[in-house]
Image (cartoon, rainbow, N blue to C red; front, side):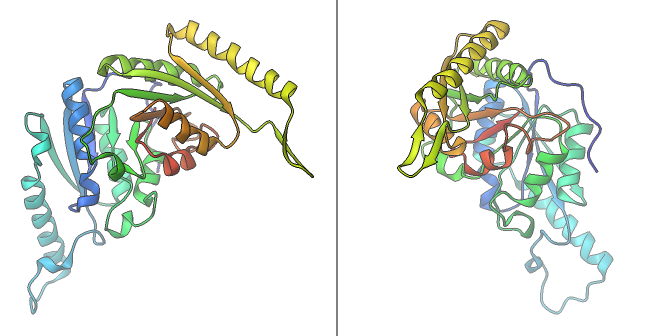
Length: 301
């Protein structure tokens, strides 16, 4: 069940960051960027672990133990609490951290905790070794993106960004030039300013090519019209929100060109928007695919 909707954000102020974790290396990849963001914004991190019968190793019990269902649940919860109490990676030194242990469906409990504790952003990995995290964009992450109204930071390729440490120096913001784009761009600009990063706005139109006997043919007049319209709309958007960011306008394969734009601008973070009615996965034409294919972390606001 989807949580009650919050009022739409008109500014991005991050004081509390919810970081759901499982006790596996894969989920801990998100801690480094969470710690970096918390330090830059003087925010508190809430480490959350949700206990379910399916996501905890049975190896914590000795062979031959006679365990009732109630005992099993009690011991799983107790072990999870001990592990959570001991979970404080060196990356979190100096950061205000609160640990929370819940029981139930992971996605529902994450969304519920975010709502009840007035969390400003959820940061979570999409991969892990547990049953609920085995897909490229794990089912828990997908459900949280669907059910939560607060901004969600995630990515399918977070491990690719951790080798040399983490920092956000360049922010890429994708806008589809719908009426939601003004809010998306404004929030991205506020975030970039607050963390001292450069901002680039990108708009990818559908391909203006036509497949014919000779291959893909591009109508230059049509392309000029489409790009010209997008350029005017981008100018209007920037005037409205008071930014002077660099702009990239292109046409073709959205996912491929988005990654190319990120590489060209050396972006460390991609910001995309969403409408509460459609959820984080439904906007920008194909939010799910953007998150799945992006080579950098994605913040859906």
